[in-house]
Image 1 (cartoon, rainbow, N blue to C red):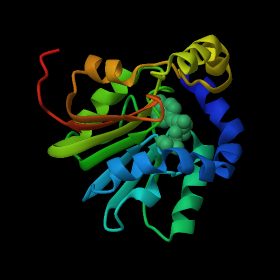
Image 2 (cartoon, helix red, strand yellow; image 1 turned 180 degrees about the horizontal axis):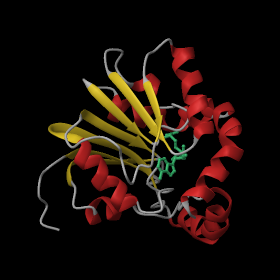
Image 3 (tube, protein in one colour; image 1 turned 45 degrees about the horizontal axis):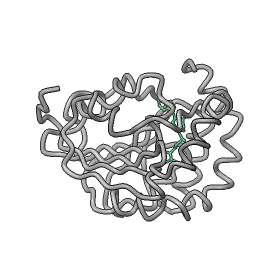
Image 4 (cartoon, rainbow, N blue to C red; image 1 turned 120 degrees about the vertical axis):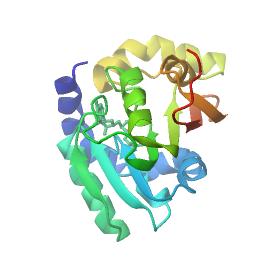
Length: 207
Ligand SMILES: C[S@@+](CC[C@H](N)C(=O)[O-])C[C@H]1O[C@@H](n2cnc3c(N)ncnc32)[C@H](O)[C@@H]1O
């Protein structure tokens, strides 16, 4: 899908996604809290969507959220209001971040690389804008390690992509490796469908 197809898809689904956010949190909240609960300073949430990550961040962080979809950002603004939190939200392409190098203490992103047309470019951008002493945290989803579930995902992969723009059989570890990022810690959950990363920016993995 092109960027404009993705924008059109999220314009259509933003309301529905926002309404079912509670259900999303039931499934992914534990993983988001685990990965994002200890970041600090200036934090960039890449492809923040409706702002599902915001409640898992410590109160003291200076939050910036970006997303390509204005409709998702409108919901993210409502989430900030509901949570009584401050933050800056901007419409921006994750593959071409409009921030100088080394801008943020932490760069976080959840369930997003599966929708980026070029996920490797987006991960390299996250590394570029993260301070060398900072941290990159990802909560990603992909192919299950339970064979029956994985077979279902593969069977439905094309239809799921056509409807939502999400490559749900993507292997997050492969994308992170291809981007040459240095993984400090990786964890999996939910029958292997969730993979979370702590990444150290600026370290050469030799890939
Ligand atoms: C499945 S949603 C995840 C949203 C949120 N991170 C969460 O965990 O609930 C994927 C998000 O990626 C955004 N997105 C897709 N392509 C993008 C791009 N190139 N740049 C920025 N955001 C993008 C979509 O608009 C959507 O909000």
